[in-house]
Image (cartoon, rainbow, N blue to C red):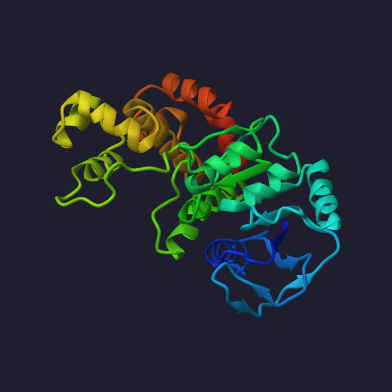
Length: 314
């Protein structure tokens, strides 16, 4: 069981706090080894929120984070980066013992200030892009992603991308079935991949969105042989327009996206049944087990069999 600290501060953002508490702090007796989570602060309560209101929450004021395996910083005011010394020491100690540290939205400024993002890619809400790049020019900033996560350090773009990062962490610890169940509890679709763009060219359509409908059509037929030309035709676009739209919306090519969706399906199949690798390849659209193995090694650095041993029957 991982012990989790959600570290809150003055001017905290309620949405990101809600994401962290809803996904990690609710008691889940139905899942073995679920997180044991405390909301803690290095500041006295009550705390002001970003909306200039005060809330009275059950916050444990702490002087260290020694007993926690994972630390989540749901937000932080980038104009007030004078962190308490004991908070600095405590977070760095978690990092030194390879504890997991997550930031949601503006919480990334704490990680950057402590040097935890040096030699790592990072992201935050696009509104803070220029401020972040000016303050930390040595950090590899990525604007067109939802989140960055390497198993130890994670940071997300704004608002709903925080949920995607948290769901990815749950998937990492408990597998796809539990992550998708957690998403359904929040009345969400299964979590989005971190490489997706923060931006959509036309988020509100005057006509039904055939592009989005095409993606749904593909995900319902991943085991079938689907070409990119078929996808473009389904979206009622020329191939060139479809490729351009895909790049601007998803920050990847249609082919890369299709491979990722098939990998996600293969993961789910490996976790939930004992079918042979040949059958998993067939039912996830890779046709040949060699193609499945190639893509698992390329994108996950392990074989399908190794993945099954790691996640099956958790």
